[in-house]
Length: 175
Image (cartoon, rainbow, N blue to C red; front, side):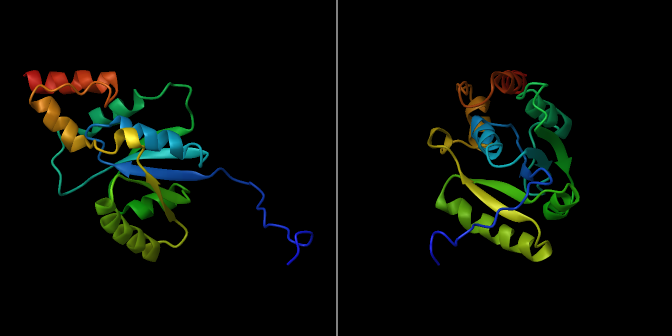
């Protein structure tokens, strides 16, 4: 096909593109925020959804985690919605009109599990894609679990999580 005759398929943008970024966010880290901000470069709206994980005991109650996430964004940022999800994530994403589920990957070890989830979600709902974003190099070594361990033993977590989250961790572990 010659260059002159090639016309790429361009879809009219009729509706906004929505993605769901799920996690336990216990607590939210700067790595999570990096993924959220980069997702906003791809999608019109990002729903940050606290998902329940039966294999994890949360340090912070769900409502407190929701508020910590909300406090990360100015009130004028209407492109970010903070919510919680109970049940199948892919069903939640579909009902919210999301075209994608965003997942952050830190290492190859994350990929195997995330790939299996993506395939299962695709089987359940073909209209919802999974988009993998590599964690920024600055944040590749952090996780909420590591942050909690550092805070638990009096280590400095500043610069790795938002300041208001640092304060919440200090309050939890000082008592």
